[in-house]
Length: 292
Image (cartoon, rainbow, N blue to C red):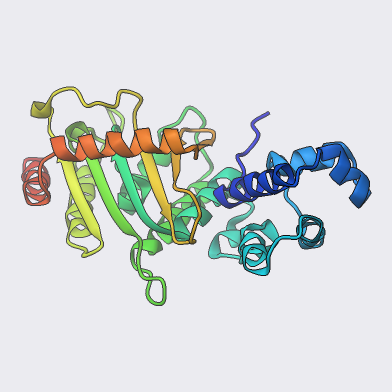
C-alpha cells in the first residue's frame, strides 16, 4: 500500500513540537502520562504520521509553555487551520497526495522546475494534458480523463491569481527533447497538431510577467541532473521550509531536509546557467513549432 506524504506544514509542525519537548526536556512517555495519551500517539504526532487536532495542539502548547506569538505560528501549521480549496470538490478523482501537491502549489510564492520528459503540468495545453493522461498502461474512463483535464486546468490558475497574494512566480527549464517528443503514440493521428498547440501554449506562457522560461539545448551537453524532472516550491508562509517534489505515475515524493533542498536548488541554478536565455528559448520554441 502506498502511504501518502504529509504536507510540508505538517512536517514542520511535527519537528517544532519534537524540538519543544526536547528543549524542556521531557520524554515522550512523560508527555503521554501528563496528557492521558499513549506514548505511541506522541510519537506519531512528532513524526507526522498522524495529524493533530486543535484541542490536542492547545494542550501541548500549554504543557510546553509556548509564548503566544510562537503558539499562533504553530496553530497556523496545523491541519485544522487549513482552508478548503477548489480541489476538495474533486475528492473522488484526486489521490490525497495529488490534492496535497495542488494545495502546496496554491500556497507557494514561487516554483522552480526542470522538465526532462514533458513540460510541467502548469505549462501543458489541455490537449497535451489529455494525451499525458492517456499514455498509460491502464486507460482511464472518458469521464475520469475529462475530470483530470479539468483539474489540471484549475491547477494552472495559480499563474493568474490576483490580489492579495498575487500569481505564482514560475521559472521553468525544459530539456530540448521535450519540444520534439510528440505526446501521441506512433500510428495514432494528431500528434503534430497537438505538439504545435503545446508549443504555442508554451510561447504564450513565456510572455507572462511572472513566468521565466528556458530551454536546455542538446548542444549544452549532459545536464548535472540525471534522475529526471523535479520541482522546488517556495512557500508564502513565513518560516515554512522550501519543498522539493518528484512526481511519478502513482505518487508524489517530497523532500524537505535543508541539505536535499539545497542540492536541488543548486542543480536548478546549474541547469539555468547552461540553458538558453528566455529570448533564445522562445525563438527555439517558435521555430520548432513552425517546422511541424
